[in-house]
Structure formats: structure tokens, C-alpha cells
Image 1: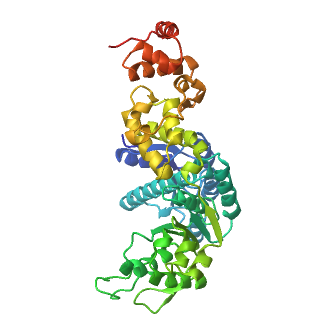
Image 2 (image 1 turned 180 degrees about the vertical axis):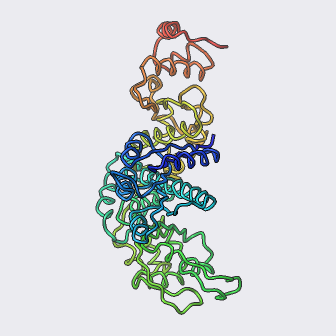
Length: 465
């Protein structure tokens, strides 16, 4: 259902506000009226409006003073001035104070209608931009980077040291470890957060197009260049450019990148104009650049230019203690996306996750959990929901009683889940996995058959054959 825009019309001439209200109501706006600035300010403090139509000449408190106070109550609220006082000085004062538009009486209703629509669209767009900025801040806050391990704590300390600086950062780690997430976190938490963040995958761009991609080109610079194009460095001016997979950048392009990093200026392809930029550079690679230098694949001078402050992101197999928290985070995310309620990860499932090598790191963990999540149906993620590539591992690390060790169950709910609920779910899973063979289920659970029967009766579990 489309939201009806709410408008507050403020004028001491009640006949005028009645006419205004009648016309705008027919256009399907929700309209309230006020005959004074004081009354209007009280109304604004009680409920939100999308637009204010304000007269300048009113008793007790003028329209200008009312406008000033409106800006303090809601700086983003558009105000259109409607008045018979069309002196230039008054108009200028109102516009300087942030009035969206100005109309003299008698009104041109057609033009006013257009101005109202444009003002409402502008407010909606500003709100959307503000919402997206808030999402970015939340999405790339340090709290979203999961890790309590010692190695990740060192990463956090490194981030804190560089966040408010302009130092060039090199993020090194295997594919899937979250290097771009760290780069975005540095940008969106630092002093350049209001400026662009431009990411470039150096491995994904053909060598013939790299120079144009980085620096842009002028019209006619080459076949197909039908107009001027702004490159990535120019797009990132004032903000951050993230050079992902820089270890795969062709050797011939490296010298041109080095020159930009040194001089902070360049020329577009086919152009003569020198373009100056102010950008922070963050690079990332999954290659050993020192080894690449020895083999002649990476320039030594570029290496020292980008490697001012290196941050090493550990692979997931070296921070296994972070897996339970990461798994809980991803499954909570999937619960929201798919509108389901997977409440916990069973211990045996967690054992498999903890002992897998994760060649694809955090990205692979997320993908496997999403696939397993779609297979789960009983409120918990069990081992049977995992792919065979993980469950076919040797089980000499697996304890017989881990299935019933409720202390190891990872809960995904915001509230504390009652132990009886978790125990019932564990019992149901054990029975299902053993095809309701009571002896096998009791053995897997590490309890006696009598105890198992007693718990089945206690929880009212239906046995299926």
C-alpha cells in the first residue's frame, strides 16, 4: 500500500488554508492546517510531516523564525514558502535558511503542484540515501567481522591503528578470507567514509582494457571510444580505491599504477590534460608478492609502495575457534532471508565443521551452511544436512557422547533456549538418524535404553517406523 504524503499548511488566513487543504486533499495528500507559527511547531513536535507550506507574514512569530525552528526540529523536512511578501531580501533569507522553494500569492497552482511533487521526491531520496548510509555503517562495522581467536584479535588491532590515517594498506590472505570486507570496513569507519569506495578486481579486467579502466579515456582515443570515460581512480577521488588481486596485475600496467601512487596524477588515455586525484589506496592479494618479485612477476618498487602497512588475514583452518560464532552468524542471516527458524547447530554437526580444512575459507563456510540450511527441517542443523565432502572425513576425533553434549550446542536465538527443548530436538534427531532403532539411538546418545524410553515418554515423542 502506497504511503499517503502528509502536508502541513501554515497561514493566518484561514480561508486560504481551507482552499489549500481542499485542493491538495483532492490530489490524495493528507493535509493539516495551522493558523500560527507556534501552533505549527507544536504540531511538528507531535507528529512527522513530509512537507510544510509556510506563510512568511504571521503575527507573534514570523515565518522566517518559524522556518528557523523547523530546521532545528527536522533539518531534512522540505518547506515551501507561500506569501504575499515578495521582497527580494525576504526571499533570499528564506532560501538561505533552507527553504525548498518560494511562491508569491496569488499562486500558480500548476507550478505549486509540480514543486510539491519534486519536494516530496527529494525528501524520499534523502531518506533513502540516509538509510543506505546507515546500512553501510552497520554492514561494515568492526562488529560484523566475526572472530575471537588470537589471530583475528591481532587483525582488529591492526585495523584500529590505520582506520583514521591515510596510510596505504596491503591486505594479504587466501581467497575467501574476507579481504574486501576488511577494506570496506577501513573505508566506511574512517575519515573518507562520505566519499566513494571503488573496488577494482585486477585479475578480471583484460590487459588491453586495464589502462582505460584505471585512468579513463578521451573520445576517439581508440576504436569504440565514442565518448569520454572517467576511470576508477578519478571516480574514487576523495575516497578509497581498492585494488583487489593486485598480484595478478600485468607487469606492463604496474609501472603506470606506481606513477599514480607516487604523483597522485595521471592523463586519460588519448588525452593531454593532467588529472589530479586524492585517493587512499588499499590493495589485496592471495599471492606471495615477495616470491612473485623473485620470479620477476611483480615490480619491487610497486611492492614497497603498496606494502606500507600490511595486514595478514589468517585462513579459517588457523582460526577454527571462530567457526561456531561464524556459523551462528550465517544461519541467523539465512533465517531472516528465508523466513525460517533454524534454532541451533547440533554438536556432531559442529564437530564436522571444526575439523574440515576449508580450502575456500569463510566464503566456503557460508556457501556450505546456506546449502545445508535449505536441507534442514526440524529446527536444528544436523550432520545429515551437511554435504558428503565434509561428513566423509575420518571420525577418530569424534566423541561417542558428543550428540548429547548440550553445552556444545550452538544456539541461534536471541533468547536462551530451554534445555528441555534442545534435549527433545537432540533425541528426535538421534532417533531419525538411526531409523528409530532404540538400541542404536541409545548407543549414539551415550545413555541406556531405559533412560531413552523414559525421555521419549517425558517429551511425548512419536516413534515412526
